[in-house]
Image (tube, rainbow over all chains, first blue to last red; front, side):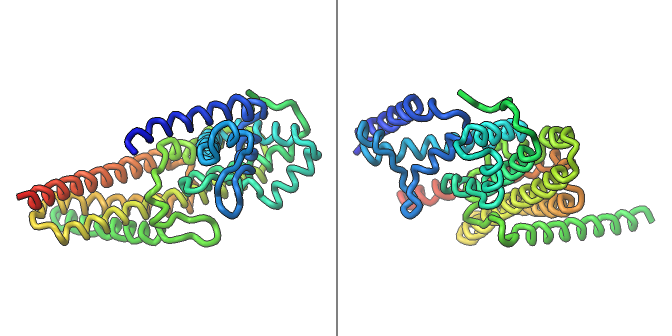
Length: 154
Length: 180
């Protein structure tokens, strides 16, 4: 049992690095990464699933690595200044296959970003994130389509 | 005459503090449909950066630069809501710490009155600050209250730390009593 702990920690870290390198680095913007990671979580069980990652590591290790990445990206986004978050929303809306206007409208109506929160995060922080996204959507909607500035494209 | 007026001023100040403390306690209750801070949520650590973000003027300057009245109003409304959730969270966390402390104190055999008074005074001040913050946020919005919010956060951390120290002391003395 004692020997298991460090070995397990290293493996989650490896899976996490692999996830960053193979999947997340190909996604433009932290908001898009957050949505992607949230989409790997099962609505009913709260467990994360990624077949490729689970094949290279173990299912439970892959799940932990996904959860870790999800939390880290969430904390990063929640601390973004509003101006930077506006850039993220702009990048996300412009990069999606649906029309930008359609995405913005649906996001304002359905607020799907609420489902993208990791579990057990600080309530005030979650509220700040939701509130900032709401504001960013309102700001982006009244702007003409521009090239994104300040978003984390890498 | 001066002494009498000081006494009146003292009583008025005490009443004000107690009112604000009561207001703080009321503010710590759930706010309705939005996710409010319950006492279970309060156990989650509150990131230090959060206060800076909620009460920062940087975002407000950005919004003001957009020159859009609707967005400005939305910003004020949203920030107010988040700030109130934060105040609820701090208040709930402190009440939880105090309840745990009271339980531990009831079982303790070597209570120090001075320490207890000190902790209770800090608790009262914190609840008063939460009450003042809550009222001021509702009246004026959070953007002018960064200093007070930082004070509340520091004080809540201090109360938690004192409680942790007392708990650790109680545990070690219980262990010593058990081994003796």
